[in-house]
Image 1 (cartoon, rainbow, N blue to C red):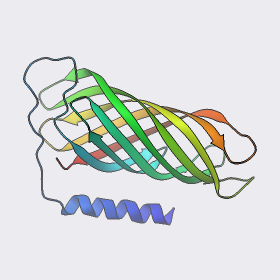
Image 2 (image 1 turned 90 degrees about the horizontal axis):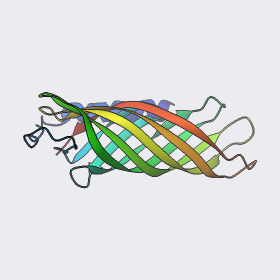
Image 3 (image 1 turned 90 degrees about the vertical axis):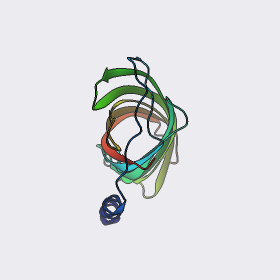
Length: 177
């Protein structure tokens, strides 16, 4: 946990050291589809997992999302979690002058390297299906997001303990371009 805290402090210091950036204006009109005005963002998330979060828009409504950090399950599992998701932003729920709130859906993969009361250094591999919303600011290079992800592990290297769970996180990202 000390490593995670140190990493988060280093990332926060990096955000403070970068020059201010500005979000590009969005296309005018009242489209119900989301139009990304940023390309790459990096930030932190709290929840399952707690750590770094990144997002890269492939085009105006499709993105790759990644995260890695520490996670503690209610089942007593502690460890390192990493995921990579393909996201689709099909609709804007709210469109206002200072921000938009798009809904996003996705599919991806996750790796969870954990320990619990039965074993040390155990690995679980699975799929993730996130759904979330983002407060995507128009005039500043930030977004704040909240997501839930259905996780189904298809491989756990002990006890044949396959299963499904829901992870949730809230986070903030700074957009570099």
